[in-house]
Amino acid sequence: MHPGSPTEPRNDTYHVITVCLGNICRSPMAESVLRAEIDRAGLAELVDVDSAGTGDWHVGGDADHRAQATLRDNGYSLDHQAKQFNPAWFEERDLILVMDANNLSTLRGWAKRVGVDDAHVRLLRSFDPAADHHEVPDPYYGGMRGFQDTLEMIEAAARGVVAHIELELQARRTSQPPN
Ligand code: 4NP
Image 1 (tube, rainbow, N blue to C red):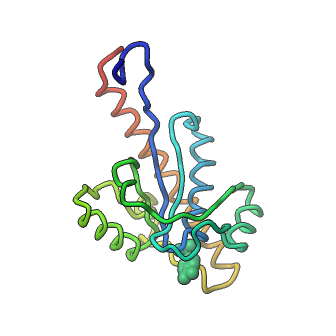
Image 2 (cartoon, protein in one colour):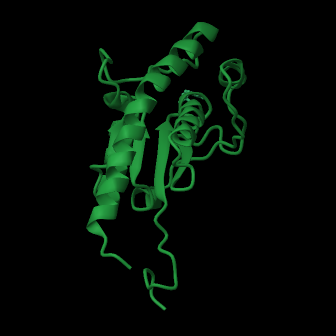
């Protein structure tokens, strides 16, 4: 039986991953907020979200306690174990959302090295039409206020991300032949 035959449902899950440097502050926060926004849009069955870092220092560890507190205080949940981005995921993720220019440059370099397309690697804040610039600055070396600012930047972009995913899902549906 081949995938897509009438008796086997296609694996149509849309995979999105958020990426920062350490995978303990910004990208786990973005993962949690995006998942909540996807749930609210009724897309939980169709869209999978995870997160990763370009660095490996925190692999296997929890999210930063300030990120956890900020999420909790704002009504979000997160069950997190940090991981490093694996270049195999360029082809396994439909949308790769990076936090800053450094993450973007790292992933573009890796994509070039492994010879894969990187057009789906995008700055998260480019999905916020009101954003005055397109980076989510690293809050790691600052205080709690920076984490709240981070959350608000992510929330503002998450709505645009979900609108983009909805369009991509719609485009997939119209390009697929009926079963
Ligand atoms: P993140 O923040 O990239 O938002 O997770 C950082 C966390 C840890 C480090 C740097 C940034 N670090 O150097 O350990």
